[in-house]
Image (tube, rainbow, N blue to C red; front, side):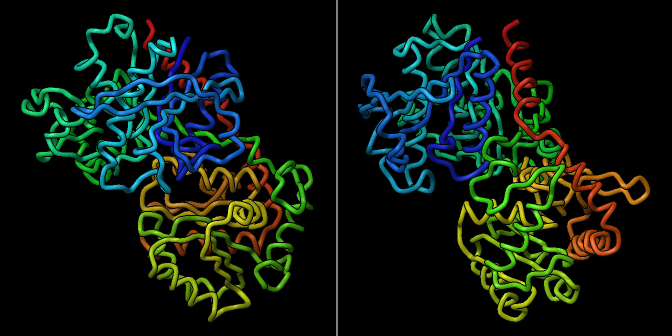
Length: 477
């Protein structure tokens, strides 16, 4: 089986979030299972030099972006049994950031056209073309409406994965002729139109052969008005081809026994290193080095979507308990200043690093007792899985991928891998935190049972990749 995976970002080359993690991990797992896997990405000049040095320049050709003739260079890299092709165009991709430019519509129109026109040239016609989010969602539409005359492409089946439905690619009707060099018939008849805009994501949902989301619960949630961001009716209409497959995490980079960022390694059978990591983190943050106090950590973007208005509402209350609270992240200024205020007011209990630091993040996953992740919505979420891998029990809002990955503590059976609250209020968040704090202080035996269960849970890509392979095989029948 041949699979072509197209995305706007991919670890370890460049990433801003979960899409980059998935694009990095899933193809690698597919290749290990015998699927011939090719990944196509834009060539951002921000790629680390160590990878740029290994790139092979293959050839170049011109892509017609409407009336514009644009250079398209193809670079190649082999890594972990996966072939990566990079679409090179300095005008579009020689920039500091991946997203956030006035001409993103043109940049990703060029990328999608280049992906399709590259396939024959590199002699790789996939059985399945797997696209991700709005940056590549027009590809299924283009294959059926613009490139339908190419015989070699007739048998290609398409899968669209929605990582976050909030980003849809809204553009004017003129984009079809001006960037894609097409007529406006499918806009005028309403097919790819939504609220008087061309909607890349809607086009992908209607034209892809299968649609997946990054967790089973999220695939149900986006069919509702609350979470569908205007596309809920289209998704309900296409529900027969929609499913949710929970993301995994990379077990090589998230491994308490071999993590280069940790001062002390540890395992499920020997947690002494975890205790030493806790002490080291307390020292790093200038907190009292106490073994008996529950250490709560947060590693996140500080936004309303991530639920930090609820946390700040309860911080004064939380810090009345015998706890320690450490936070790493950047985001909305009000949240940054709010956590700085509590860190200054309660220096013996609370510390905040308002920055981005990969090494410190890993230390915090590993050293804490409790990991706080109260997102308003979460398509999948990876942080809660990383925390559990390191024996840190998450407190989460039971939504999307958080609901699918964390089993709330049941006091009767002593089963669970974390703590959850259903109603999205500060009061309910605090009740869950209190339950976790009280269990930690009152019953270390049960606490360690939960830690065992959390560390035993399999969040590797092994299972998820099998589900994707099954999906691909269904399309080939």
